[in-house]
Image (cartoon, rainbow, N blue to C red; front, side, top):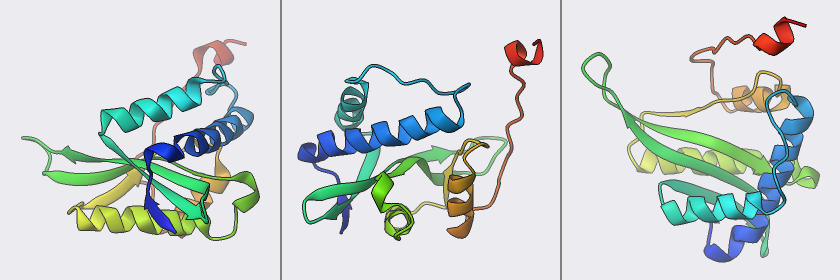
Length: 158
């Protein structure tokens, strides 16, 4: 069942956050490092306290096996049209639950929330190295909107 996270979910969400970050460290070690052990619980607690983001979870009979962290951002100005965007920071699914439709259910929950709050779009960033996530999001109907190009100066000099 997809629902908003509660305070008592913090420990389980933090563990899923750690799993996701460990995966990012594996596929892109030049961009991600593992922080100290209590970082994940502290960061999820801070996000909940700040109240600027929403965390949805998949609750499987009291066990949280996936989460989505996102926020609503209003953009625009004199040179760009006004927009209300649902920006997904991350979707994390427990390693043993991947490829079973849980991520799709979470994404659909985020999209429904975005529609209910009047958003124009759902948007996110994904590491170029994360081919599984890119394929998943494309399957969910997301298309590239912009591309960030970078050169690691330390690696280029070697």
